[in-house]
Length: 446
Image (cartoon, rainbow, N blue to C red; front, side, top):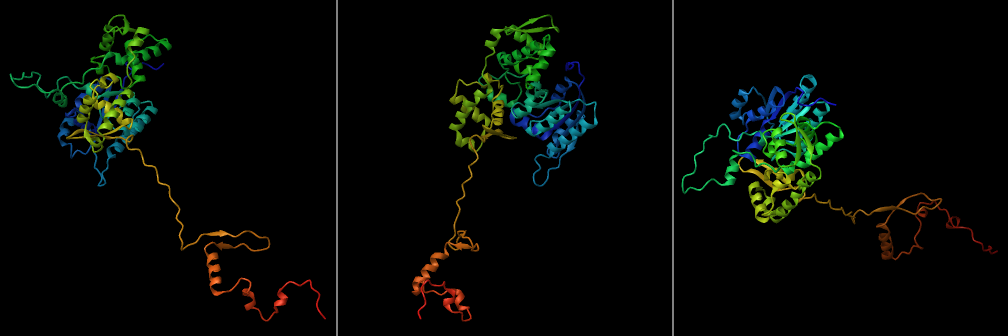
């Protein structure tokens, strides 16, 4: 059995697709990208040996000082005149693969991006026995990329409750002044998303405990978490309001969802049996798309030209007041839109000023069926078909359109087919016609 990941010493190489992560964080959380928070989260998983960021730094000059303070190597990406959209992706993938081939001591790679184009790189690194972390926002990172890495680290989970640039002491609003609305507070991005219910994590916990039982392995804390990540790389205890996995298990124990024995640091987790299975029956994420499809169909004209995600969320609340996306495992509405995008229900494009813009996906715009081509027959160019085959005669092609013309011409000149001379008689040198006819059976007269 492979040695447990806690006992392994990861040497991590960090590759940052800066243009992608910066616009993703700005459009979904309305705040600036904090590279320090990402690096601190990766330091909890191993030692960072190299850090490389790719961007057009002429547009990102305000971040160069921040990256320099954290010793991040900045690679310039010069866009081509044709709009080299994937230039940074190609450079990042080539450098990561080269490092995997030439630096054997590096056994882990962290891809900081939400672009689904990196799925090929992730799979290739896994083939070379490298552990792959993906860091990105849940609202703009492809769910395909999230589920195919070893561990997905959501950017929302690494945020501090109170950012460094925000004062810790907030003055209370004066009397008579309205308090700041909830959407404005969420737009500021100063707080983590609301935690999910613990019951949503129970299907994964139950499955991981069953795997450990079949392996006849004692379900300790570290082994349980590694098994859960192996089954679902998107799991994070912080999504459920826990600061650590130990805190997460203690919350499960208080909610009477699992049995916990042993002391702190040596917890042993066991299933509750049928009661836990009943409590673990939660809605599946795919079921939330039914409500979303109905709202999209109702506002099809507005969304077909692009609508802000906040407007779509308001329409969902207006038409389905009892609908709560957190019941389906989504912390935020943008996270559900990201899931719907991978299912071709919508198409989401981040915008620096307008935030997330939502368009109808391929499901609402299926490709048109090609029209059947009708063969055209020209009167000027008649079609030809082979004449019937007769033994002893050469093959030749007969034109359909010429035969009626000959009959018409013959009737106009008053010539019958019987009185028409064969062409061979005109070129003859005086051979009698009788010689050309068949001999008669009648007796000659004397």
